[in-house]
Image (cartoon, rainbow, N blue to C red; front, side, top):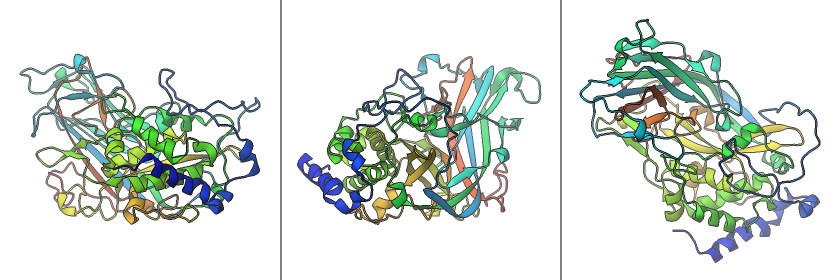
Length: 485
């Protein structure tokens, strides 16, 4: 349960004001005259930002120098080479519980556009595009775009073997997300499907990357002030509403009144009275005290296969003080954004030893599981640098429900010695575009013309292996070493 308002106010007062030594490291005389800083932006003029502080005066006109990313405040150490393999299977035959169409287009469902297959033994289509995300460079990982491989199969026949990646444009998708795309259509060519009918569609992608531990220069980073001008485009983009952060899986907005009240109380109504790093740390401390991770957000079919992610959501978590590890990470992301601090969610897979056995095997007792953490943007306007700072709120909470003082370095706040063993997959639970999935978000999505099927069943499989030690191909269904069924 959450604490009374008076207790919360007293706590934040102690954190932000009584700890004069901590604040002395990050406050300067100019802070006394500092006005509220820039308003977070959005790429959609019809969407409201997470918070709306007053606009400062614009910086002098002129050509902007190229943004330097990563900046100097995060150092990567002990890199390891990994490849994350994602496989999605969509079938028309029910493997277990019924699954109805779920559109994840913000604001509305697509049931009115869905069509049933009637007695037909599969899906009918003219064109089909299957997409899967590729995470951008994060605090600890760099994907190798030129080495991405994959395939699309329809009824066990490959129809596409060259995945297409969307361009690296900050304005495309929030946080720098890009999409891997496979496309096929009705036709008689080798890359087409006769009669436009399919019973099973399967997609696989292999994404090589370098993952490293991070070391955070918190003392220097704490001197970085709020920007007086605008955020860089890739930073502004994270304020767009996101499934499981600001909205339900169908795009309907959460009621974030309770979380906004908490953020207001935790910051005495003035989040920008301290600089970004101290704000991020103070909010993390309050979330660690107030919220208890519990439960599992993975949704499975009767076969035991992973179907996707079914979170309680930020609205419910804020009211109850409890939620899964994914819910706590989403709530932290939402709290940062409400306070005006740009933040993005990162979803990854623990890669340790998973080349020996498929991590989705339930007998693995937690090894190789999904992980989620938060990265907030530290934009040094003076030097035009950008760092994404990792905050693994769940790992911080597992150490203790009483966070250490703000003037001490925290393990998993910026400095993270496990990130060379975690492969980032996505920044969202569903691709940030007009594609659909079934029953629950599962990272992937598709567009089918003239209309998507009304019912389908999705199953997801993931591996992460050392690039120098490639596992056997999971398309071999007799390969027990990789745990395929």
